[in-house]
Length: 106
Image (cartoon, rainbow, N blue to C red; front, top):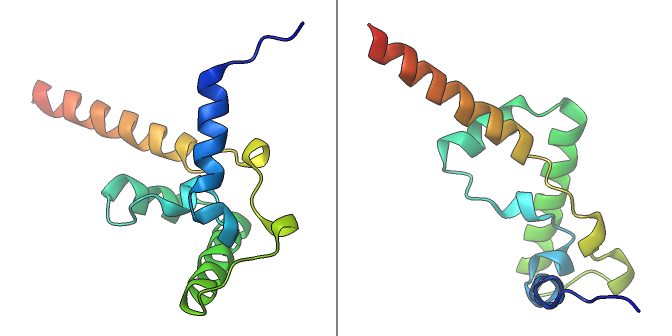
């Protein structure tokens, strides 16, 4: 007998109810680009990951302007949507905290 986590089911349902998977975007693609930690994380991305992100965003903008979505088989899958900016954001925040700590020593 398998145990089903109702919170996990709710997350999955909410994920597919949002608009971004239908446009082929990943969750980290829709983070606020004006936040300094997101700007820095995007700047630190490897070239391939940066170009993939730019492609997804430009394709989503085009689809949105056309009031269209991707075919269902091209939607971003919940299980495959791994955060790719989070490790960079975590590192950046740790660096900033360390800088602040060293600044307090002076």
